[in-house]
Picture (spheres, rainbow, N blue to C red):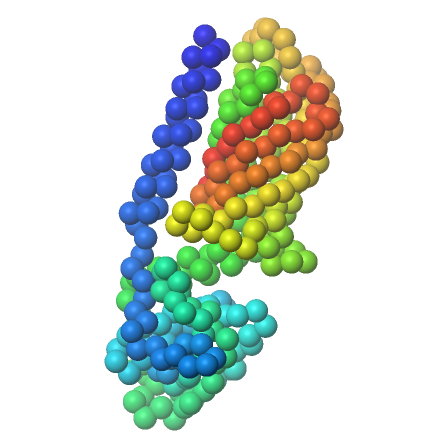
Length: 279
């Protein structure tokens, strides 16, 4: 019976992962156009009118009515004159799969108030929806705090797991994140509550359509109850054990998959397989 329940939970987790992944691939936004970009010794150069600007993105409409979405290189500080209606010249990287470019240098050719074409008209012309969608995803991903959830299974002992998590950062390093989370586990003979104070480091690489791998470690505060269920188990029946988690995972936009093991944690699962989502 326990094996059948575990098999059903595994099938449910795999199905959910496939549905989310396929849907994400089907809903990929169209890439902003980069046909008007010119290449020189310093990279790609785009000159045009600023359509929109956020804390982390810049959309420029070039003279051939093409839209270019830029994110900012580390250390780039935007001039206050870089605003909708201004004419700018941007040096940046080649477009990625979504058409996004990293801006290395932004020079103002004409301020918005002096633009011969009229700043008001440039501000009134919004970028295409697909460009706005990508910019929104970048802005959302740059937030320093995310909340989410996770679901999965544990092995040895066998548990059904679900929980809540938070992602905070980056701290000290652009790829270092603090990811505290709480997991609840239920099995035929074991129940568990775990508070995990983990840190994750994202690797500077991607695979299979923007999946970004990461690894991490952190202490785990485990409360575990073992024994046949009596239907009336209180928190006082749980024994406490401090452990140490080591995990590997991969994240694509808001979805992530993760494999985790616990050291020195006594009766906690030896292996956990999880899938989650950050809002």
